[in-house]
Length: 41
View 1 (cartoon, one colour):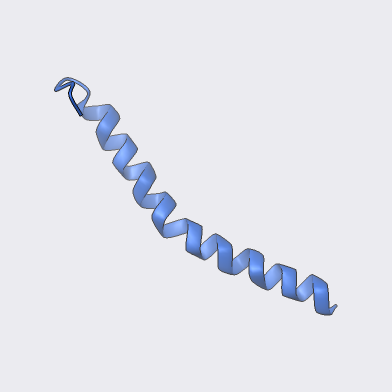
View 2: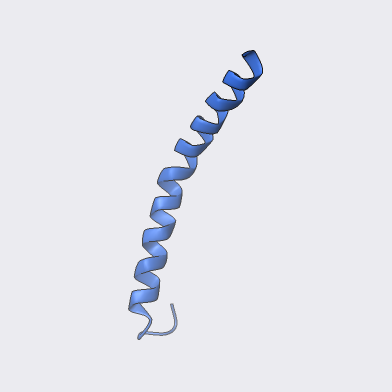
């Protein structure tokens, strides 16, 4: 954040963090369902 010329790096990092924040709960739910499915079947 101290480098003013790294706008593209910070922008891509913000996009990656946003996707991670959105996808990590969804992936957790999917993995949880798969674990329950494999555990009960």
